Image (cartoon, rainbow, N blue to C red; front, side):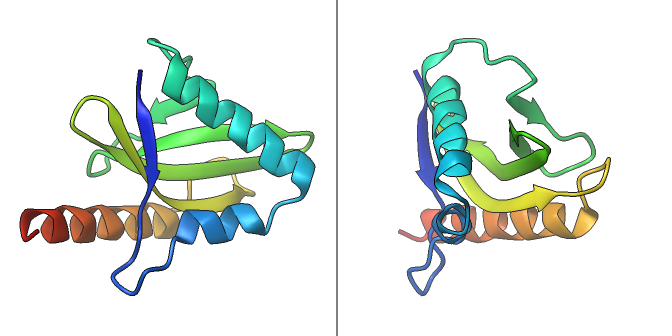
Length: 117
């Protein structure tokens, strides 16, 4: 069983919550369903959770609703905690490097702040 947390910025904002708030209720429902799978399944199909190659341990939660594709990027903190830190609507074949950089930078911020707690 995994737990999913949303990354909180130093000023108390949650980029993933803000992203989810921008979705329609049907889209948000599907995202919630996929997040539940990620938490509950021992082995999550790569259709829904996949490690991105050539990144600093960034994983993506993959959600498709009709013709819309959404990605939530994050990382593992230990074996069972997934910290999601960036969400976007995917419009290209590859995950945009800009979005990966945001996720990597937030991962670095999270781990640095955790170390100093």
